[in-house]
Image (cartoon, rainbow over all chains, first blue to last red; front, side):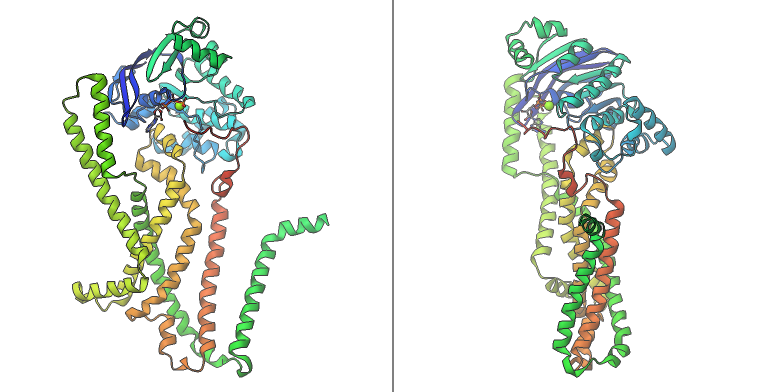
Amino acid sequence: MIRVNDVQKHFGALHVLRGITFEVQKGEAIVIIGPSGSGKSTLLRCINLLVEPDSGQVFIDGVQVNRHGIRHEWVRQQVGMVFQSFNLFTHLTAIDNVTLGLTRVKGMTHDKAVEKARELLARVGLAAKENSYPAELSGGQQQRVAIARALAMDPKAMLFDEPTSALDPEYIREVLDVMTALAREGMTMIVVTHEMGFASNVASRILFMDAGKIVEEGSAEQIFHRPKEERTRSFVSKILR
Amino acid sequence: MADLRKFLRERWRYIDAMLAVAVIVGSLAYIYDLLVGSRGLDVAYITRNYGLYVHAVLTNVYATTIAFLVGMAIGFSVGWLRTARTMPLAKFVLSLRAERRARSEDREVIKADSGFLIFFSLLWYGAKYVVRRIGDGFVEIIRGTPLYVQILFASSFFIVFLREYATEGLLIGIITLAINTGGYQAEIFRAGLQTVHSGQIEAARAIGFSRLRAMRYVILPQALRLIIPPLTNEYIGLFKASTFLFVLGVQTEISYIALHEGYAGDVFEIFAMVTAIFLAITVTLSFVVQSLERRFRIPGLGIEAVRKPRGVKMPAPVA
Ligand SMILES: Nc1ncnc2c1ncn2[C@@H]1O[C@H](COP(=O)(O)OP(=O)(O)OP(=O)(O)O)[C@@H](O)[C@H]1O
Ligand SMILES: [Mg+2]
Protein backbone atom coordinates (compact mmCIF):
# COMPACT_ATOMS: atom_id res chain seq x y z
CA MET A 1 0.00 0.00 0.00
CA ILE A 2 2.68 2.44 1.05
CA ARG A 3 6.28 1.75 0.17
CA VAL A 4 9.15 4.02 1.07
CA ASN A 5 12.45 3.25 -0.58
CA ASP A 6 15.78 4.74 0.50
CA VAL A 7 14.34 8.18 1.26
CA GLN A 8 16.85 10.89 2.12
CA LYS A 9 16.09 14.37 3.39
CA HIS A 10 18.31 17.30 4.27
CA PHE A 11 17.34 20.58 5.84
CA GLY A 12 20.31 22.67 4.81
CA ALA A 13 23.31 20.87 6.25
CA LEU A 14 21.15 18.86 8.65
CA HIS A 15 20.71 15.29 7.43
CA VAL A 16 17.32 14.34 8.83
CA LEU A 17 16.41 11.14 6.97
CA ARG A 18 19.31 8.85 6.11
CA GLY A 19 17.92 6.23 3.81
CA ILE A 20 14.55 5.07 5.10
CA THR A 21 13.05 1.92 3.60
CA PHE A 22 9.89 0.17 4.72
CA GLU A 23 6.56 -1.03 3.50
CA VAL A 24 3.03 -1.04 4.88
CA GLN A 25 0.53 -3.58 3.59
CA LYS A 26 -3.06 -2.72 2.85
CA GLY A 27 -5.10 -2.79 6.06
CA GLU A 28 -2.02 -2.84 8.24
CA ALA A 29 -1.39 -0.43 11.10
CA ILE A 30 2.19 0.26 12.10
CA VAL A 31 3.58 2.41 14.87
CA ILE A 32 6.76 4.46 14.68
CA ILE A 33 8.58 5.35 17.87
CA GLY A 34 11.83 7.16 18.42
CA PRO A 35 13.47 10.01 20.31
CA SER A 36 12.68 13.65 19.63
CA GLY A 37 14.38 14.95 16.50
CA SER A 38 14.91 11.49 15.03
CA GLY A 39 12.91 12.47 11.95
CA LYS A 40 9.54 10.79 12.58
CA SER A 41 7.47 13.80 11.61
CA THR A 42 9.66 14.49 8.62
CA LEU A 43 9.17 10.91 7.44
CA LEU A 44 5.37 11.20 7.65
CA ARG A 45 5.52 14.52 5.81
CA CYS A 46 7.61 12.94 3.08
CA ILE A 47 4.87 10.39 2.51
CA ASN A 48 2.18 12.98 1.76
CA LEU A 49 4.76 15.33 0.22
CA LEU A 50 4.28 18.17 2.67
CA VAL A 51 8.05 17.77 2.58
CA GLU A 52 9.71 16.77 -0.66
CA PRO A 53 12.27 13.96 -0.25
CA ASP A 54 15.70 14.76 -1.68
CA SER A 55 16.07 11.29 -3.11
CA GLY A 56 14.46 7.88 -2.88
CA GLN A 57 10.96 6.87 -3.83
CA VAL A 58 7.58 6.96 -2.17
CA PHE A 59 4.94 4.63 -3.60
CA ILE A 60 1.27 4.79 -2.78
CA ASP A 61 -0.80 1.94 -4.11
CA GLY A 62 1.98 1.07 -6.52
CA VAL A 63 2.29 4.60 -7.93
CA GLN A 64 5.47 6.54 -7.36
CA VAL A 65 4.22 9.86 -6.08
CA ASN A 66 7.39 11.92 -5.71
CA ARG A 67 8.13 12.41 -9.35
CA HIS A 68 7.35 14.98 -12.00
CA GLY A 69 3.89 15.01 -13.44
CA ILE A 70 2.13 13.99 -10.23
CA ARG A 71 0.24 16.76 -8.54
CA HIS A 72 0.98 17.08 -4.86
CA GLU A 73 -2.62 18.05 -4.22
CA TRP A 74 -3.74 14.73 -5.64
CA VAL A 75 -1.24 12.78 -3.56
CA ARG A 76 -2.37 14.48 -0.38
CA GLN A 77 -5.94 13.43 -0.99
CA GLN A 78 -4.79 9.82 -1.08
CA VAL A 79 -3.37 9.91 2.45
CA GLY A 80 -5.04 11.68 5.35
CA MET A 81 -2.95 13.32 8.04
CA VAL A 82 -3.70 14.06 11.68
CA PHE A 83 -1.49 16.50 13.55
CA GLN A 84 -0.28 16.72 17.09
CA SER A 85 -1.80 20.18 17.45
CA PHE A 86 -5.11 19.29 15.71
CA ASN A 87 -4.95 22.32 13.38
CA LEU A 88 -8.69 22.55 12.96
CA PHE A 89 -9.73 25.55 10.89
CA THR A 90 -10.39 28.08 13.63
CA HIS A 91 -12.99 30.05 11.71
CA LEU A 92 -15.20 27.09 10.88
CA THR A 93 -17.59 24.95 12.92
CA ALA A 94 -16.89 21.24 13.35
CA ILE A 95 -19.09 20.29 10.43
CA ASP A 96 -17.69 23.01 8.16
CA ASN A 97 -14.20 21.78 8.98
CA VAL A 98 -15.21 18.43 7.56
CA THR A 99 -17.11 19.74 4.54
CA LEU A 100 -14.56 22.35 3.39
CA GLY A 101 -12.33 19.82 1.66
CA LEU A 102 -15.32 18.01 0.21
CA THR A 103 -16.84 21.07 -1.41
CA ARG A 104 -13.69 23.01 -2.28
CA VAL A 105 -11.30 20.22 -3.21
CA LYS A 106 -13.53 17.37 -4.29
CA GLY A 107 -16.20 19.66 -5.75
CA MET A 108 -19.03 17.88 -3.98
CA THR A 109 -22.36 19.68 -3.64
CA HIS A 110 -23.00 21.28 -0.28
CA ASP A 111 -25.91 19.00 0.62
CA LYS A 112 -24.02 15.82 -0.13
CA ALA A 113 -20.98 17.10 1.76
CA VAL A 114 -23.08 17.89 4.83
CA GLU A 115 -24.65 14.46 4.74
CA LYS A 116 -21.26 12.79 4.56
CA ALA A 117 -19.82 15.04 7.26
CA ARG A 118 -22.69 14.17 9.61
CA GLU A 119 -21.99 10.49 9.09
CA LEU A 120 -18.31 10.98 9.87
CA LEU A 121 -18.93 13.11 12.93
CA ALA A 122 -21.29 10.43 14.21
CA ARG A 123 -18.59 7.88 13.61
CA VAL A 124 -16.15 9.75 15.86
CA GLY A 125 -18.91 10.28 18.42
CA LEU A 126 -19.47 13.99 17.86
CA ALA A 127 -22.84 14.15 16.14
CA ALA A 128 -24.08 16.57 18.80
CA LYS A 129 -21.18 18.99 18.33
CA GLU A 130 -21.46 19.77 14.64
CA ASN A 131 -22.12 23.46 15.19
CA SER A 132 -19.39 24.08 17.75
CA TYR A 133 -16.31 26.06 16.85
CA PRO A 134 -12.93 24.47 17.61
CA ALA A 135 -12.41 26.81 20.56
CA GLU A 136 -15.61 25.44 22.09
CA LEU A 137 -14.43 21.84 21.93
CA SER A 138 -12.13 19.95 24.28
CA GLY A 139 -8.78 18.82 22.96
CA GLY A 140 -9.97 15.26 22.54
CA GLN A 141 -13.06 16.40 20.67
CA GLN A 142 -10.97 18.64 18.41
CA GLN A 143 -8.68 15.77 17.54
CA ARG A 144 -11.66 13.55 16.70
CA VAL A 145 -13.05 16.24 14.41
CA ALA A 146 -9.60 16.40 12.79
CA ILE A 147 -9.77 12.66 12.19
CA ALA A 148 -13.22 13.04 10.63
CA ARG A 149 -11.91 15.84 8.44
CA ALA A 150 -9.10 13.64 7.16
CA LEU A 151 -11.42 10.66 6.63
CA ALA A 152 -13.81 12.79 4.61
CA MET A 153 -11.40 12.82 1.70
CA ASP A 154 -11.70 9.02 1.46
CA PRO A 155 -7.98 8.48 1.91
CA LYS A 156 -6.36 5.15 1.12
CA ALA A 157 -4.22 5.46 4.22
CA MET A 158 -3.92 7.65 7.29
CA LEU A 159 -0.88 9.23 8.90
CA PHE A 160 -1.02 10.18 12.58
CA ASP A 161 1.73 12.40 13.98
CA GLU A 162 1.62 12.08 17.77
CA PRO A 163 -2.15 12.56 17.82
CA THR A 164 -2.48 12.34 21.59
CA SER A 165 0.67 13.92 22.92
CA ALA A 166 -0.93 17.36 23.26
CA LEU A 167 -3.81 15.95 25.28
CA ASP A 168 -4.43 15.66 28.99
CA PRO A 169 -4.56 12.00 30.06
CA GLU A 170 -8.33 11.89 30.49
CA TYR A 171 -8.89 12.83 26.86
CA ILE A 172 -6.36 10.44 25.32
CA ARG A 173 -8.61 7.39 25.62
CA GLU A 174 -11.40 8.74 23.39
CA VAL A 175 -9.00 9.54 20.57
CA LEU A 176 -7.22 6.19 20.79
CA ASP A 177 -10.59 4.42 20.75
CA VAL A 178 -11.49 6.11 17.48
CA MET A 179 -8.11 5.16 16.02
CA THR A 180 -8.42 1.57 17.22
CA ALA A 181 -11.85 1.26 15.64
CA LEU A 182 -10.45 2.67 12.43
CA ALA A 183 -7.65 0.11 12.39
CA ARG A 184 -10.13 -2.70 13.08
CA GLU A 185 -12.16 -1.57 10.07
CA GLY A 186 -9.09 -2.17 7.97
CA MET A 187 -7.71 1.34 7.45
CA THR A 188 -4.03 1.39 6.52
CA MET A 189 -2.33 3.49 9.18
CA ILE A 190 1.08 4.82 10.10
CA VAL A 191 1.04 6.16 13.63
CA VAL A 192 3.79 8.06 15.39
CA THR A 193 2.99 7.63 19.06
CA HIS A 194 4.47 6.70 22.37
CA GLU A 195 1.23 5.17 23.66
CA MET A 196 2.48 1.69 24.49
CA GLY A 197 -0.99 0.26 25.05
CA PHE A 198 -2.17 1.33 21.62
CA ALA A 199 1.02 0.08 20.00
CA SER A 200 0.70 -3.34 21.64
CA ASN A 201 -2.99 -3.80 20.88
CA VAL A 202 -3.28 -2.36 17.41
CA ALA A 203 0.06 -2.24 15.62
CA SER A 204 1.13 -5.22 13.61
CA ARG A 205 4.69 -3.91 13.65
CA ILE A 206 6.69 -1.26 15.40
CA LEU A 207 9.53 0.67 13.82
CA PHE A 208 12.11 2.27 16.06
CA MET A 209 13.76 5.29 14.48
CA ASP A 210 16.86 7.07 15.65
CA ALA A 211 18.98 9.75 13.96
CA GLY A 212 17.20 9.44 10.62
CA LYS A 213 17.40 5.67 10.33
CA ILE A 214 15.13 2.76 11.11
CA VAL A 215 17.16 1.03 13.76
CA GLU A 216 14.89 -1.87 14.52
CA GLU A 217 11.61 -3.30 13.36
CA GLY A 218 9.45 -5.95 14.97
CA SER A 219 6.32 -6.88 16.86
CA ALA A 220 5.34 -4.88 19.94
CA GLU A 221 6.33 -7.81 22.11
CA GLN A 222 9.80 -7.90 20.55
CA ILE A 223 10.49 -4.15 20.53
CA PHE A 224 9.20 -3.51 24.04
CA HIS A 225 10.44 -6.63 25.80
CA ARG A 226 13.24 -8.23 23.80
CA PRO A 227 14.88 -5.44 21.77
CA LYS A 228 17.94 -6.54 19.84
CA GLU A 229 19.64 -3.17 19.57
CA GLU A 230 21.16 -1.35 22.47
CA ARG A 231 19.68 1.99 21.30
CA THR A 232 16.19 0.52 21.20
CA ARG A 233 16.67 -0.94 24.66
CA SER A 234 17.69 2.34 26.23
CA PHE A 235 14.90 4.30 24.50
CA VAL A 236 12.21 1.77 25.40
CA SER A 237 13.36 1.65 29.00
CA LYS A 238 12.86 5.41 29.13
CA ILE A 239 9.30 5.41 27.82
CA LEU A 240 8.24 2.22 29.65
CA ARG A 241 9.61 3.26 33.01
CA MET B 1 -26.54 45.27 45.19
CA ALA B 2 -26.35 42.12 43.12
CA ASP B 3 -29.17 43.50 41.01
CA LEU B 4 -27.26 46.69 40.38
CA ARG B 5 -24.19 44.75 39.34
CA LYS B 6 -26.22 42.59 37.00
CA PHE B 7 -27.85 45.68 35.56
CA LEU B 8 -24.46 47.30 35.02
CA ARG B 9 -23.06 44.21 33.37
CA GLU B 10 -25.97 43.80 30.98
CA ARG B 11 -26.24 47.45 30.07
CA TRP B 12 -22.59 48.25 30.08
CA ARG B 13 -22.38 48.89 26.36
CA TYR B 14 -25.10 51.53 26.55
CA ILE B 15 -23.74 53.11 29.67
CA ASP B 16 -20.35 53.25 28.04
CA ALA B 17 -21.73 54.92 24.93
CA MET B 18 -23.70 57.42 27.01
CA LEU B 19 -20.61 58.34 29.01
CA ALA B 20 -18.68 58.90 25.80
CA VAL B 21 -21.43 61.13 24.44
CA ALA B 22 -21.51 63.11 27.68
CA VAL B 23 -17.78 63.74 27.53
CA ILE B 24 -17.90 64.80 23.90
CA VAL B 25 -20.86 67.10 24.40
CA GLY B 26 -19.20 68.63 27.44
CA SER B 27 -16.00 69.38 25.57
CA LEU B 28 -17.88 70.84 22.64
CA ALA B 29 -19.87 73.06 24.93
CA TYR B 30 -16.66 74.32 26.46
CA ILE B 31 -15.13 75.13 23.07
CA TYR B 32 -18.38 76.75 22.00
CA ASP B 33 -18.33 78.98 25.02
CA LEU B 34 -14.71 79.87 24.37
CA LEU B 35 -15.11 80.77 20.72
CA VAL B 36 -18.64 82.08 20.46
CA GLY B 37 -19.30 83.25 23.95
CA SER B 38 -21.48 86.32 24.06
CA ARG B 39 -21.28 86.93 20.28
CA GLY B 40 -23.96 84.33 19.67
CA LEU B 41 -24.08 81.63 17.06
CA ASP B 42 -24.54 82.75 13.45
CA VAL B 43 -27.28 80.26 12.66
CA ALA B 44 -28.14 81.95 9.41
CA TYR B 45 -24.63 81.32 8.08
CA ILE B 46 -24.87 77.64 8.89
CA THR B 47 -28.28 77.13 7.33
CA ARG B 48 -27.17 79.05 4.25
CA ASN B 49 -23.96 77.08 3.72
CA TYR B 50 -24.15 73.60 5.20
CA GLY B 51 -25.27 72.11 1.87
CA LEU B 52 -22.02 73.18 0.26
CA TYR B 53 -19.99 71.58 3.02
CA VAL B 54 -21.90 68.32 2.91
CA HIS B 55 -21.37 68.21 -0.81
CA ALA B 56 -17.67 68.83 -0.34
CA VAL B 57 -17.40 66.06 2.23
CA LEU B 58 -19.19 63.66 -0.07
CA THR B 59 -16.39 64.22 -2.57
CA ASN B 60 -14.03 63.12 0.19
CA VAL B 61 -16.07 60.04 0.98
CA TYR B 62 -16.11 59.14 -2.68
CA ALA B 63 -12.37 59.62 -3.18
CA THR B 64 -11.52 57.84 0.06
CA THR B 65 -13.68 54.83 -0.64
CA ILE B 66 -12.39 54.22 -4.14
CA ALA B 67 -8.80 54.78 -3.05
CA PHE B 68 -9.31 52.49 -0.09
CA LEU B 69 -10.65 49.61 -2.16
CA VAL B 70 -7.88 49.88 -4.73
CA GLY B 71 -5.45 50.19 -1.83
CA MET B 72 -6.78 46.94 -0.41
CA ALA B 73 -5.81 45.11 -3.57
CA ILE B 74 -2.36 46.70 -3.49
CA GLY B 75 -2.02 46.13 0.23
CA PHE B 76 -3.01 42.49 0.05
CA SER B 77 -0.62 41.73 -2.82
CA VAL B 78 2.34 43.57 -1.35
CA GLY B 79 1.57 42.30 2.15
CA TRP B 80 1.40 38.72 0.95
CA LEU B 81 4.63 39.18 -0.93
CA ARG B 82 6.29 40.46 2.18
CA THR B 83 5.39 37.32 4.11
CA ALA B 84 7.70 35.34 1.80
CA ARG B 85 10.74 34.23 3.70
CA THR B 86 14.06 35.36 2.31
CA MET B 87 17.49 35.23 3.83
CA PRO B 88 20.60 37.26 3.11
CA LEU B 89 22.27 36.21 -0.12
CA ALA B 90 25.53 35.21 1.57
CA LYS B 91 23.75 32.94 4.00
CA PHE B 92 21.82 31.33 1.18
CA VAL B 93 24.97 30.50 -0.78
CA LEU B 94 26.60 29.15 2.36
CA SER B 95 23.66 26.88 3.06
CA LEU B 96 23.69 25.60 -0.53
CA ARG B 97 27.37 24.76 -0.20
CA ALA B 98 26.87 23.11 3.17
CA GLU B 99 24.02 21.02 1.79
CA ARG B 100 26.16 19.92 -1.12
CA ARG B 101 29.03 19.00 1.11
CA ALA B 102 26.77 17.07 3.49
CA ARG B 103 25.35 15.12 0.59
CA SER B 104 28.62 14.31 -1.05
CA GLU B 105 30.02 13.05 2.23
CA ASP B 106 27.47 10.38 2.77
CA ARG B 107 26.65 9.48 -0.82
CA GLU B 108 30.03 9.85 -2.55
CA VAL B 109 28.45 10.74 -5.88
CA ILE B 110 26.90 14.14 -6.30
CA LYS B 111 24.01 13.79 -8.67
CA ALA B 112 24.91 14.92 -12.17
CA ASP B 113 22.07 17.43 -12.31
CA SER B 114 22.99 19.14 -9.06
CA GLY B 115 24.60 21.95 -11.07
CA PHE B 116 21.29 22.63 -12.74
CA LEU B 117 19.51 22.37 -9.46
CA ILE B 118 21.75 24.98 -7.92
CA PHE B 119 21.33 27.22 -10.94
CA PHE B 120 17.55 27.08 -10.75
CA SER B 121 17.36 27.48 -7.03
CA LEU B 122 19.58 30.53 -7.38
CA LEU B 123 17.33 31.91 -10.12
CA TRP B 124 14.17 31.29 -8.09
CA TYR B 125 15.83 32.72 -5.03
CA GLY B 126 16.96 35.79 -7.01
CA ALA B 127 13.49 36.47 -8.38
CA LYS B 128 11.94 36.13 -4.94
CA TYR B 129 14.61 38.33 -3.42
CA VAL B 130 14.18 41.14 -5.95
CA VAL B 131 10.39 41.19 -5.82
CA ARG B 132 10.46 41.09 -2.07
CA ARG B 133 12.91 43.98 -1.88
CA ILE B 134 10.75 46.06 -4.22
CA GLY B 135 7.85 45.44 -1.85
CA ASP B 136 9.95 46.48 1.12
CA GLY B 137 11.09 49.64 -0.66
CA PHE B 138 7.55 50.57 -1.62
CA VAL B 139 6.31 50.29 1.95
CA GLU B 140 9.24 52.21 3.37
CA ILE B 141 8.90 55.06 0.88
CA ILE B 142 5.16 55.40 1.42
CA ARG B 143 5.48 55.30 5.17
CA GLY B 144 8.55 57.48 5.27
CA THR B 145 7.35 60.49 3.30
CA PRO B 146 4.55 62.98 4.05
CA LEU B 147 1.33 62.50 2.11
CA TYR B 148 1.48 66.16 1.16
CA VAL B 149 4.78 65.60 -0.62
CA GLN B 150 3.41 62.50 -2.32
CA ILE B 151 0.48 64.46 -3.68
CA LEU B 152 2.74 67.20 -5.01
CA PHE B 153 5.02 64.55 -6.50
CA ALA B 154 2.11 62.81 -8.23
CA SER B 155 0.85 66.10 -9.55
CA SER B 156 4.25 67.01 -11.00
CA PHE B 157 4.54 63.51 -12.41
CA PHE B 158 1.29 64.05 -14.29
CA ILE B 159 2.33 67.48 -15.48
CA VAL B 160 5.58 66.12 -16.90
CA PHE B 161 4.51 62.75 -18.28
CA LEU B 162 0.74 62.78 -18.68
CA ARG B 163 -0.02 66.36 -19.59
CA GLU B 164 -3.54 65.74 -20.82
CA TYR B 165 -4.62 64.44 -17.39
CA ALA B 166 -2.75 67.01 -15.36
CA THR B 167 -5.88 69.00 -14.62
CA GLU B 168 -7.87 66.00 -13.39
CA GLY B 169 -7.26 66.81 -9.74
CA LEU B 170 -9.68 64.23 -8.37
CA LEU B 171 -8.22 61.43 -10.49
CA ILE B 172 -4.66 62.23 -9.48
CA GLY B 173 -5.80 62.53 -5.90
CA ILE B 174 -7.50 59.15 -5.87
CA ILE B 175 -4.48 57.48 -7.46
CA THR B 176 -2.16 59.01 -4.91
CA LEU B 177 -4.38 58.11 -1.99
CA ALA B 178 -4.73 54.54 -3.29
CA ILE B 179 -0.99 54.09 -3.52
CA ASN B 180 -0.51 55.71 -0.15
CA THR B 181 -3.05 53.59 1.67
CA GLY B 182 -1.78 50.55 -0.25
CA GLY B 183 1.56 50.98 1.47
CA TYR B 184 0.00 51.16 4.91
CA GLN B 185 -2.44 48.35 4.22
CA ALA B 186 0.42 46.14 3.05
CA GLU B 187 1.69 46.18 6.61
CA ILE B 188 -1.78 45.53 8.01
CA PHE B 189 -2.29 42.59 5.70
CA ARG B 190 1.16 41.22 6.37
CA ALA B 191 0.54 41.28 10.09
CA GLY B 192 -2.85 39.64 9.61
CA LEU B 193 -1.58 36.90 7.33
CA GLN B 194 1.37 36.16 9.57
CA THR B 195 -0.81 35.97 12.65
CA VAL B 196 -2.72 33.02 11.23
CA HIS B 197 -1.02 29.93 12.58
CA SER B 198 1.14 28.01 10.11
CA GLY B 199 -0.61 24.79 11.17
CA GLN B 200 -3.71 26.10 9.40
CA ILE B 201 -2.03 26.20 6.01
CA GLU B 202 -0.49 22.84 6.67
CA ALA B 203 -3.83 21.27 7.52
CA ALA B 204 -5.39 22.77 4.40
CA ARG B 205 -2.60 21.50 2.19
CA ALA B 206 -2.78 18.08 3.83
CA ILE B 207 -6.33 17.62 2.57
CA GLY B 208 -5.38 18.67 -0.93
CA PHE B 209 -5.71 22.46 -1.10
CA SER B 210 -3.26 24.30 -3.32
CA ARG B 211 -1.42 27.24 -1.78
CA LEU B 212 -3.70 29.70 -3.52
CA ARG B 213 -6.91 28.02 -2.44
CA ALA B 214 -5.62 27.54 1.10
CA MET B 215 -5.08 31.29 1.09
CA ARG B 216 -8.58 31.91 -0.22
CA TYR B 217 -10.53 29.52 2.00
CA VAL B 218 -8.49 29.20 5.17
CA ILE B 219 -6.00 32.02 5.69
CA LEU B 220 -7.85 35.05 4.34
CA PRO B 221 -11.14 34.45 6.18
CA GLN B 222 -9.20 34.37 9.43
CA ALA B 223 -6.79 37.17 8.60
CA LEU B 224 -9.58 39.50 7.45
CA ARG B 225 -11.40 39.10 10.74
CA LEU B 226 -8.22 39.87 12.63
CA ILE B 227 -7.50 43.04 10.65
CA ILE B 228 -10.94 44.67 10.71
CA PRO B 229 -9.94 47.10 13.49
CA PRO B 230 -6.67 48.32 11.92
CA LEU B 231 -8.35 48.54 8.51
CA THR B 232 -11.09 50.71 9.99
CA ASN B 233 -8.44 52.88 11.51
CA GLU B 234 -6.75 53.17 8.17
CA TYR B 235 -10.00 54.13 6.46
CA ILE B 236 -10.69 56.87 8.95
CA GLY B 237 -7.13 58.11 8.67
CA LEU B 238 -7.36 58.12 4.90
CA PHE B 239 -10.70 59.92 5.05
CA LYS B 240 -9.16 62.73 7.04
CA ALA B 241 -6.04 62.72 4.88
CA SER B 242 -8.22 63.13 1.80
CA THR B 243 -8.79 66.74 2.84
CA PHE B 244 -5.29 67.31 1.48
CA LEU B 245 -6.69 66.98 -2.02
CA PHE B 246 -7.48 70.68 -1.99
CA VAL B 247 -3.89 71.09 -3.12
CA LEU B 248 -4.97 69.61 -6.43
CA GLY B 249 -7.88 71.97 -6.77
CA VAL B 250 -10.40 69.42 -5.59
CA GLN B 251 -13.06 71.25 -3.63
CA THR B 252 -13.01 69.79 -0.18
CA GLU B 253 -14.34 71.48 2.89
CA ILE B 254 -10.90 72.77 3.77
CA SER B 255 -10.80 74.71 0.53
CA TYR B 256 -14.18 76.15 1.41
CA ILE B 257 -12.75 77.36 4.62
CA ALA B 258 -9.74 78.78 2.87
CA LEU B 259 -11.72 80.49 0.15
CA HIS B 260 -14.76 81.69 1.93
CA GLU B 261 -15.17 85.31 2.71
CA GLY B 262 -16.56 84.29 6.08
CA TYR B 263 -13.13 83.15 7.06
CA ALA B 264 -12.59 86.13 9.26
CA GLY B 265 -15.90 86.22 11.07
CA ASP B 266 -17.48 82.83 11.25
CA VAL B 267 -14.59 80.60 12.22
CA PHE B 268 -16.51 78.69 14.81
CA GLU B 269 -19.49 78.07 12.53
CA ILE B 270 -17.25 76.66 9.82
CA PHE B 271 -15.32 74.42 12.16
CA ALA B 272 -18.51 73.33 13.85
CA MET B 273 -19.95 72.23 10.54
CA VAL B 274 -16.82 70.44 9.43
CA THR B 275 -16.44 68.75 12.80
CA ALA B 276 -20.07 67.69 12.89
CA ILE B 277 -19.95 66.23 9.40
CA PHE B 278 -16.70 64.38 9.99
CA LEU B 279 -17.79 63.07 13.37
CA ALA B 280 -21.12 61.94 12.01
CA ILE B 281 -19.38 59.94 9.31
CA THR B 282 -16.63 58.39 11.42
CA VAL B 283 -18.91 57.56 14.33
CA THR B 284 -21.43 55.93 12.01
CA LEU B 285 -18.62 54.02 10.42
CA SER B 286 -17.29 52.71 13.69
CA PHE B 287 -20.77 51.61 14.74
CA VAL B 288 -21.20 49.75 11.47
CA VAL B 289 -17.81 48.12 11.85
CA GLN B 290 -18.52 47.13 15.44
CA SER B 291 -21.71 45.41 14.45
CA LEU B 292 -19.88 43.74 11.55
CA GLU B 293 -17.29 42.49 13.99
CA ARG B 294 -19.96 41.11 16.29
CA ARG B 295 -21.73 39.53 13.36
CA PHE B 296 -18.61 37.76 12.09
CA ARG B 297 -17.08 37.09 15.47
CA ILE B 298 -15.83 33.57 15.95
CA PRO B 299 -15.04 32.00 19.29
CA GLY B 300 -11.32 31.48 19.68
CA LEU B 301 -10.25 33.84 16.93
CA GLY B 302 -8.48 37.01 17.96
CA ILE B 303 -7.91 38.06 21.53
CA GLU B 304 -9.87 35.15 22.91
CA ALA B 305 -7.47 32.69 21.29
CA VAL B 306 -5.19 33.13 24.26
CA ARG B 307 -7.57 31.08 26.39
CA LYS B 308 -6.63 27.45 26.18
CA PRO B 309 -9.30 24.89 25.44
CA ARG B 310 -10.10 22.26 28.01
CA GLY B 311 -7.92 19.21 27.98
CA VAL B 312 -5.00 20.60 26.05
CA LYS B 313 -1.55 20.87 27.45
CA MET B 314 0.33 23.99 26.50
CA PRO B 315 2.57 23.01 23.57
CA ALA B 316 5.99 21.87 24.69
CA PRO B 317 8.83 24.10 23.51
CA VAL B 318 10.20 22.79 20.21
CA ALA B 319 13.57 21.11 20.54
N1 LIG C 1 11.17 22.66 8.00
C1 LIG C 1 12.33 22.39 8.66
N2 LIG C 1 13.41 23.15 8.46
C2 LIG C 1 14.58 22.88 9.09
N3 LIG C 1 14.75 21.87 9.96
C3 LIG C 1 13.71 21.07 10.21
C4 LIG C 1 12.44 21.29 9.57
N4 LIG C 1 11.58 20.34 10.01
C5 LIG C 1 12.28 19.58 10.88
N5 LIG C 1 13.55 20.00 11.01
C6 LIG C 1 14.60 19.37 11.83
O1 LIG C 1 14.68 18.02 11.48
C7 LIG C 1 14.91 17.22 12.63
C8 LIG C 1 13.88 16.12 12.71
O2 LIG C 1 12.64 16.70 12.95
P1 LIG C 1 11.30 15.88 13.14
O3 LIG C 1 10.23 16.86 13.44
O4 LIG C 1 11.11 14.99 11.98
O5 LIG C 1 11.63 15.00 14.42
P2 LIG C 1 10.63 14.11 15.26
O6 LIG C 1 11.23 12.75 15.31
O7 LIG C 1 9.26 14.22 14.74
O8 LIG C 1 10.73 14.75 16.68
P3 LIG C 1 9.57 14.98 17.77
O9 LIG C 1 9.41 13.69 18.51
O10 LIG C 1 10.14 16.05 18.64
O11 LIG C 1 8.34 15.43 17.04
C9 LIG C 1 14.89 18.15 13.81
O12 LIG C 1 16.21 18.39 14.20
C10 LIG C 1 14.25 19.39 13.30
O13 LIG C 1 14.80 20.53 13.92
MG1 LIG D 1 7.42 15.15 15.42
